[in-house]
Amino acid sequence: MSTVDEVQQAVMERMLRGELAPGTWLRQDDLAAQLGVSKIPVREALHRLAASDLLRFENNRGVVVPMLTAEDAAETYGLRLAIEPELLRRAVPKLTIVHLAEAEMALAASDVQGASVPEANWAFHAALYGAAGWRRGMAMVQSLHAAVAPYVALYTQDLGGAATSDEEHQRILQACRDGDAERACSLLEVHLREAAAALDHVFTEDTDAGTR
Image (cartoon, rainbow, N blue to C red; front, side):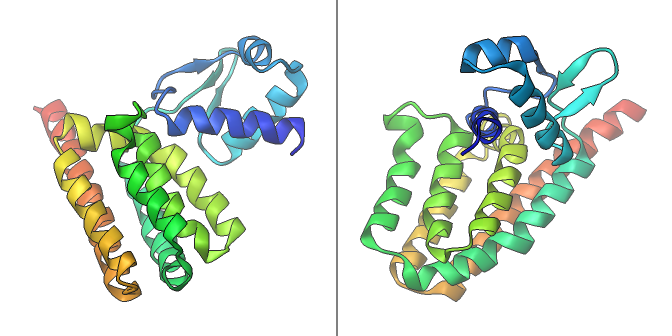
C-alpha cells in the first residue's frame, strides 16, 4: 500500500474500534506524528475519508467525525442491506473451517480479548464475507462499518441490544456452518433491519422530545 493508503487504513481501523466518537476533531499534525509520516499523505487520506462522508472538513476549524443523525443511520443501514446479504450469499458455499473459526472467535473477542464491540462486530462480518472474493465489495462494506461503528455502540450498549445482537450473530453463524445461504441471508437481513429500526426509534424519540 502507498503511504496514503496506510494512513487511510489506520484512521478507519480507529473508527472501527470505536476510538473516534462523533464530534472528535482530528489534527493533521498529531496524526502525522503518531503514524510517523509527513502531513501530505495525512491530508490526502483525510480528504479521501471525507469524500466517503466518514469525516467532515469544517472551514477554519479542521476535520471532525460527523455527529449521528437519523438520515445517516438510515442511509448506512440501507446500503448494508443492499450489499452485505449478496456478499454472504456468495461466501457461504466457499466458507472453510478457518473462516468459521475466525467468525466464532470474533463473537467472543470483546469478552475474552478486550476488543471493542464495533471492532468485534466488524471482525465477525468480515470473516464471513471475505470468502465471497469481492474485494471492492469488501472495501465498501468496511467503509460502511467504519461509519456505523458509533451506531453499533449505541445499539448494543446504550439501547441494550447486546444480547439480541449476539443471539442473531450466533444464528447467522450456525446457518453458515450448515451451508444454508438463504437462511443465513434471511437472518442477516432481519439482524440489520432490527438494529436500524431500534436506532430510528431512538432518533425519533429525541426529535419528539426536542419539540415538546
